Image 1: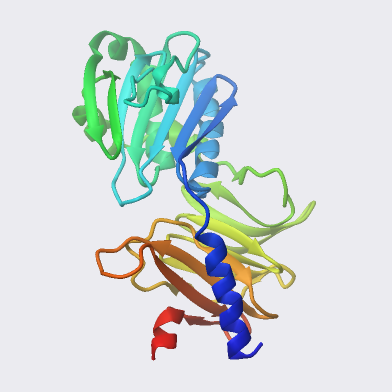
Image 2 (image 1 turned 135 degrees about the horizontal axis):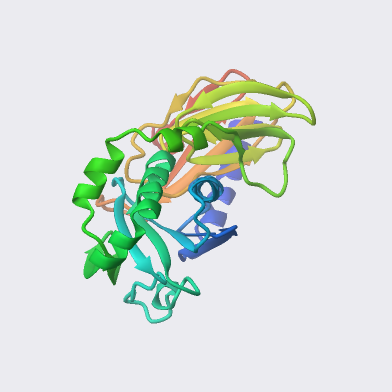
Length: 322
């Protein structure tokens, strides 16, 4: 594909991604006595991570012979980078959110149960299970000592029950749990309704193992500490470990094609890249973001990746201006 055609294809692509609006959404799942909710803005891999937490939480509750309802509530602060803030209560999960139509303005459990609520830009599976173990073992203490609190940060405006979490976090998160370590020493495959075979991953011991999966065979491709996004385009899979780091895997060759690329100057971006195939081996990766600089807003950012020689153009706009 020559340069003129490549640019034309890219501009059409850019126009198409800028005509749609945006609204946060909820994903609610139930596994046994575990109910998980995540509020987020885009289809980050964090959504699948929460489902994995739900599966592990059910196993933890079964091991502790706890059969009453448990709510694990995750408010995804995807526009920044903040560590989770935790809340613990024993009630039906209502938090009196400032939006009258919001899901949190009603009971989320039929009867009173353990509620583990957190707000953050990424959720730690191991830490969540440790806090849940503490909650199950100390549910009567939580019920008796919880108080109404107001939390007004990270686009949340909640009035809800919680115990004081400073000492809980210090004692629980800094300690080792034999039971949790046993629970996490099992494979949990990526929840998905399609692509059950081919390139996928399983989670085990706080790591993500990417594999090529067949009926009775798994071939390890790479291991990552985190997964931010996964996109399959034609015969390649783009795997983002964070919003800055990605690598590319070939579907048919079942191998990692690329280095682990670091995208430059992407700190202000929180949207997932949209990726399209431009030619046999070239792909456009684009997003838009807000900036304090003058000019058209939001700003477009287009990268071009070539799988043939594993080469990344970091910013097409800069090349065009030059």
